Length: 244
Image (tube, rainbow, N blue to C red; front, side, top):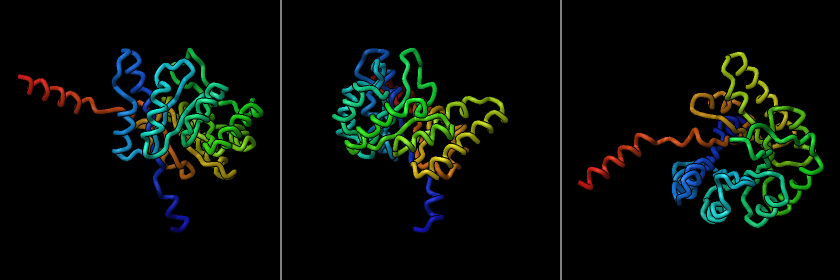
């Protein structure tokens, strides 16, 4: 395969099943099950399953991580805060990769990228621990070249570029400006030899311009991909009819 072939390959798709667990936890039931959702995602062609084990356990639980580690057939990516507790859990569970993210208990979802430049020593230690355990170390960062350079200095394997501002931009000029920041960060990372991923807020309407960025090798997409209401309603109606 020559160089041109690799440029036209689509990025890998990581499917985040956190919000399947959010529904389950909100009702304190055993369903819907993120483990089952991960299986269905893989059957449909997902290249990776992504989960975020939060410190407050608001959605994904340790039980989910343990089962998914045994059942995921592609790759398991664990998003987590850079804390001693989470590093210990990751070290024991051995996901294929860990993505370090900032975390605040009051946020609904991750609001921004990790400040690698402002906490290089602490993050470098976590990255080393993960890599010593043969876990790929990824950092979720804002699309800023300084953060990319800092990620390179702490020897991260991957940077996942936060696409939230691009996705949230309503005006065409704002969206173009934010997309340009993503492009610049992706190019900077690739030049430094860091694998480039992207995610946050991506959906059916905004993903194509990000796919067109040749340096991005992986996209992680969560709740936007959880569709199927029409089919589910048809199936339930069929069950009701069968009961009569």
